[in-house]
Length: 273
Image (cartoon, rainbow, N blue to C red; front, side, top):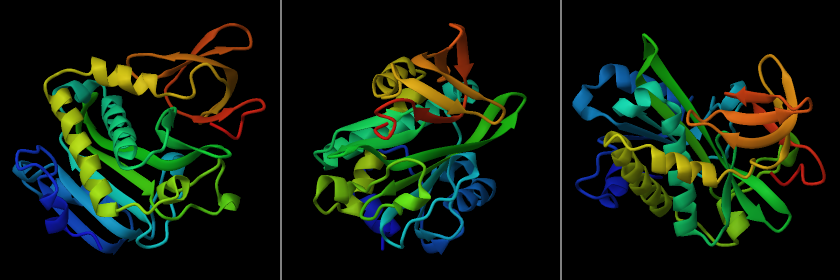
């Protein structure tokens, strides 16, 4: 089991995050625990990291459930007060989490890594691209400004979901890399990359982070079908804007800006990305 002392031992003493670390055998959702911590801890105790061996009510985007056998994944949430630049561009925290995760995977495994817009982390396997991690962002708002945020993350380390319960191919890092993954070492590497990018945002610099996130998007240039809460949109994903919205040219030639949705690739490689 992961524990706060072991986690902190692998982090730099001057790291800005996390300040507080909680580890649990089992929780309903690390997001819920992190939300309670934000409300109860003094500001100096944030950011707060909540790690669990097992979640009984874990969730992903669009209300989907997230299941992982105990001890087989990294399941955590990071609760924080956002850097000023992220109070009006909260998607910068998604970029931070996604890029940090890509960098950690590349440092700890030989795998090729990419992103499916907006926040699924994929690795390349012998049969194509497969999801190995997902990121979720929740927050509190005051007059259109983000005042607190929770970044939730689930990374399949040694076990992958049953293909019958997933919409798209999924795998685990140890399976795709064909080698054991040290969860503690991986989490420490990931937190180090979080800390690096968090400092960039604190300094007011999001341009390089956005460019790095954009360059990792496997979705761009693909013909996609996007299911939103109100519509189904088909077209070519041509770019993302500075707020992170996906720009799609639909069948009529019109450009559509998509802020959130479930993306599938249309055509022969629909199972690859």
